Length: 233
Image 1 (cartoon, rainbow, N blue to C red):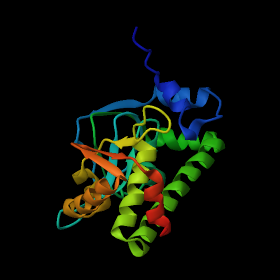
Image 2 (tube, rainbow, N blue to C red):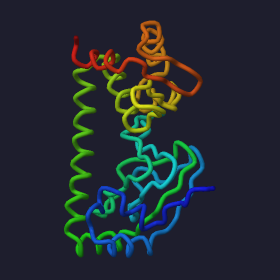
Image 3 (cartoon, helix red, strand yellow):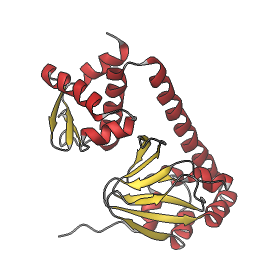
Image 4 (cartoon, rainbow, N blue to C red):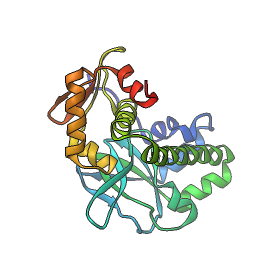
């Protein structure tokens, strides 16, 4: 028997922004939401575009980042099911600050700016939770800058793998190794470095038993060992 797919109101109610908010609030917003479907690697919006929609990922994975003048990609984050993105331009009515594209085939709920602002005016709890989400993103950006200045490449890669493992990793049973279904090229793009640099470090770690590598995926086998690379032990 197939599982019942959550409806739009249920999906909204499960997001951090709506936890503990009266049910009629997410229901009203969900009724006005549009559905967006993206193929793998399809672009949703580009840096500089008008930001008139807030998005909620319901399936798949969205990559948010920028492309430099010489073609290098740098990711700011991966947004998975149950999480919002696109809030900066919606709140300040400015242009998009980064590109957003689908890493996998994805489905999104899209909320018009006027509906989001009306909700925030009517429901201060949602506004406070959205501020909290923005603060988390700022903290994440600060951590990225700190890593670039103070961590070696192995340290940066270790932190990235641990973060990816926590956010999108697959772990069938608690305590088992965590598998990240991303290619080495995708991880390199996510960090804004070359695939060769990532492969050199990962190959050494595989020999040491920290990770194992397979086509399109990286498995963390020794989380404690990767943690030591961050603390310098």
